[in-house]
Image 1 (cartoon, one colour):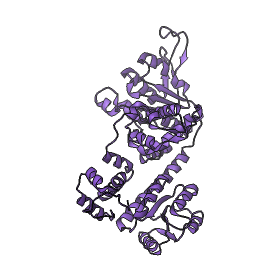
Image 2: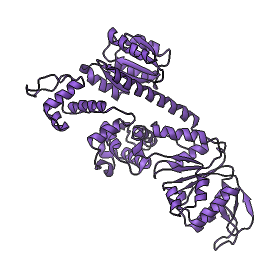
Image 3: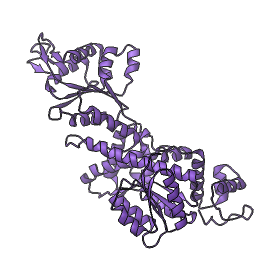
Image 4: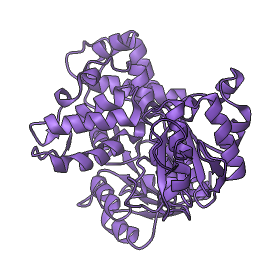
Length: 471
């Protein structure tokens, strides 16, 4: 793993030194402290990639360290160190923004796995910020929202292609934000001071669309009472966004190809050509390559359009962005309502993360707007959501577990351990119920717990009326 700057905080000298030595052997630059007070002072003097802090320490405990680092160094990943007796504190820390926790006593493989994931997360956050700086926010387009790996790849392509004049093809399902990306490319290009003109190629019949795009001469057809310049001429020097490009008919495909090749248009009913300087950004929710194979779309036009292709992920493929998107839309709509909504209940957010979002980001925005409008209190409840979301079947337990961890690659052993802990917590430590849910007998449950270093606290034969104290 690449070297990083890591801060270790633990009042247990043995645990602190063992952890620091293990990290140094992996090539990392490590500083260690026995208390949170001195560590916070050091944290404000230098930038750390990762902080590993014990929870239970003196007056400045691990949760205080977490909150302070989130304030003055929000990009730093925080991993909490905990004994099983303080597992509740670790879970509370996760809710407050900690990346993960390590349970004492540490195992070398587990330390390496958690540290690597935390450092990868820190790198991703910083790259995301860097590329978002490159995409300078403009008043004419809303800021891009999301920090998932899939969206980071989109940001990179947008940042790199904006300065060029290359044609861009945007692909993605309806509602994924293709026009927003097109506007971002234009707003960060040398053409930013010239027009950005969107055209929905599926909204008009070909005859009317031809006149709109290329213009017409007086008398070219019934109703053409005067000369009209088309959208290509209006967009000269700027960008023409051709949405739903896959809906173009054969005749218009030929004319569009000619304009792209020659950079000139001929108005309907005219004989003279007019020079234009237009950048084309096209978008579609259809598979253009398949349309080419079916002879429904010209291959030469496809190659002209497909110079730089950017594929936008569906919302179900970037569910980790949902809380950020919800906050963005909340800020957008809360000012227009008297409800004073300040946020969403955890169970409401959980319902949003479980839903499959066939309408993607557009559907999420509509759901947030509706919820904000109908909410009677400061926090949005599940009852404020649209019926389609309230009544949708939730993901099953395994899928929900994987969706929470979909940004990392876990070993099967780690998945089993986390699921075992989750089930025991849900059952309030009742081993009989936990074993039933897991589909195993109680002896097998104890063997699993022993393998993972979990103390269930009583004998398998001694009854199970009291919850385990250490989970």
